[in-house]
Length: 194
Image (cartoon, rainbow, N blue to C red; front, side, top):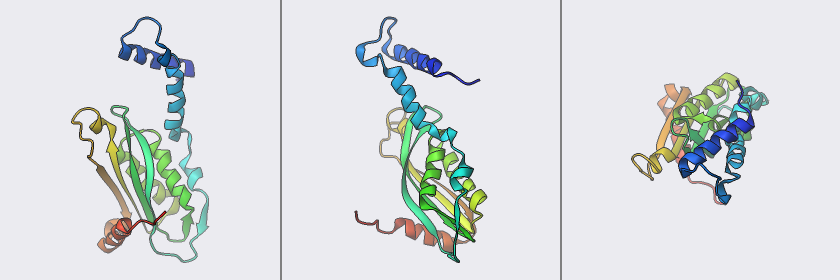
């Protein structure tokens, strides 16, 4: 059963009234909050409406390139499914092509598709790696994600500087330590200026 926008806004209105502990009219600053929250949610959770296959269906001949393709420091924002708190960080996505490559913006879009859902970091990491394997059939792929979590920063243990790191390795990155070592050196290399 699909929930209509008016129902979603009414649910947010209920939450606002719970937080403010009011049975009467909302104060001026909160009157439009339910509509604004739902509009924000439409953007924040837009990953549900995107087909990964269409994002990765446009590939190119690798022309014999058989080295590591790495897009590092992909900024992302997601929402923890357990507390609906934001978490954000950066993802490093790599693969070694066999005969097909994909435009680099597609790698960033792939991260965003999975991040823009109610998620956990482990699942995003796995889903991005699985999509690369399924759609590119690379010799290997790797996804490493580093993120700070709102549920750790503003509630519970309140550790504002804690960073969680997850990884998914497939193919040669899992099987060959030298490939994994080369990847880690590339990720740690000095960033470009400007």
